[in-house]
Image 1 (tube, rainbow, N blue to C red):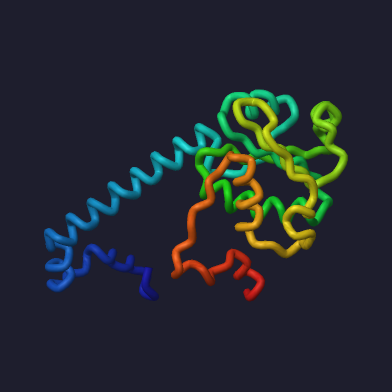
Image 2 (tube, rainbow, N blue to C red; image 1 turned 180 degrees about the vertical axis):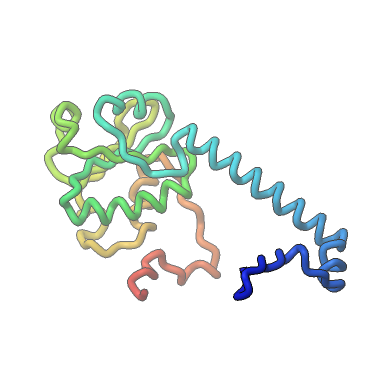
Length: 188
């Protein structure tokens, strides 16, 4: 309402010949329809990813561990403790990778709440990543030693390490991307 108590006109109520011409443009109309269709397709693809459990990095509980590791071909499970800084560092890298490698299900499980599998899989050091193919362990990564031993490493180092297990194939970098590092957040 304006200061007199009268309702303000809606934008669509305002007559403007330039706007009418703009919205009547068949090319613009076609462009909008195409963008809407692309967005709908993207949403459908995202829903499929969620149903398959790929494209996202999510936490599971112990009772669901076997179902998740045996129902998908390639699975990476991060055993973590919520109090460990290095586990949080690894989480940020795995979250990035989950959006890229859609042939892998990226999961994490709180080691403090998964006593059976911690004992069964002989997990003694955190963070620890266990890599599964068809329900069988194919590789494991313990701590940060194989990642340079430092808390500061680019995601590409973790990608190359996981590539050795055969679960992912790292994309080659184009020269225009060579100097773009995923650690740009340090500059913010």
